[in-house]
Length: 205
Length: 205
DNA sequence: TTCATTATCCCCTTTTTAGGTGAATTTATC
DNA sequence: GATAAATTCACCTAAAAAGGGGATAATGAA
Image (cartoon, rainbow over all chains, first blue to last red):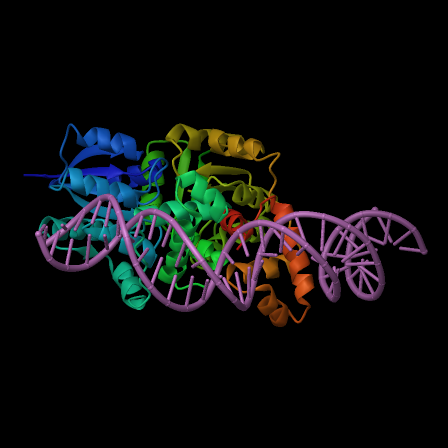
């Protein structure tokens, strides 16, 4: 029985490239593609692919968040992250959110097929470049933020003061201050400037 | 006579996608591809394509700089920028360096063909999304920073205080403060957090 | 050479953030 | 139902940034 593949990527050329690469593989059944997170979720309500190739950058939602949601709702589908960015923060968070693999957009046909076979066995597939990146940055872990911390972080980056954030979230300014201090501690930075830079760099905001 | 096309992109899937899209076009002659700026320049020493599709992000050199170099050495070839980023700063700089067009990686076959025909006539082609981005940001121009302001901005984003920046640049803290205030004014933001976010967003740091 | 820009420096006050410490309450998890 | 994690709140002091004013030298282009 053929392996059902579904792609989520907003770049037509990439979709076309993958389709072209897989065209002659008899063991692969091409189910189609979605270019937004919303249309991906709509598709999954009706059909169940075996493997989803998921881009990190989508227009309506981060692929990292989409990965989490899809894994919770449809745990039978394996997800392979797909990105141009060989960056440890992306890879790490994608895997934390339940991805079974991560390949770069310069992957060859052989790499893709190997990735499929590996994840179907329930194993994790990382391309050579990717696993090298992870090893290199094994010590520099990306901190995990709570829901509230993310909210506060976003408002900080928008330029709001603690007082404004407090009134926006209907909490005390001292509470906002606590979250702010926890953020500085988690990111191991000294002030807001470095905090925002770090967060932007790792696409946390 | 068929139009000779050459691609510079380090993503195999994108190359394959474009090749697949152009496969059945009789008016297009596929000359091949390069995945680095260096191999692109080596290729151009021997052969002359009519149109070069050039990615902005290359491993060894920025596509923006490569564009400038190729236009100077081989002015007969039209260059079309190719990127996932629909960002005015990239588009603007690519066009300033002599590109004849700019298309996104979600372009369709029709869009690509239209781009080729347009640039061959010596005209400029920008896809709808791209020209919309340019229009949208026509008023909200990205502020032009001076050499010193850039230095200060980078050190701010690294988390240094005015005192530390001053000693790093061998100037007074009040001078750093002045630059900082000018930065806030130029970017039209209220504090450091928003400043850093804005700067990161437009890849100024 | 003039004129505009850039870079430098100083004063003041108020607001905001950072650093340190402690603790109660809700929420999720086992 | 116990435990851990997350969220909430408070008070203190010190440091840093923001907002306002003004001023002088150097640079560079027209």
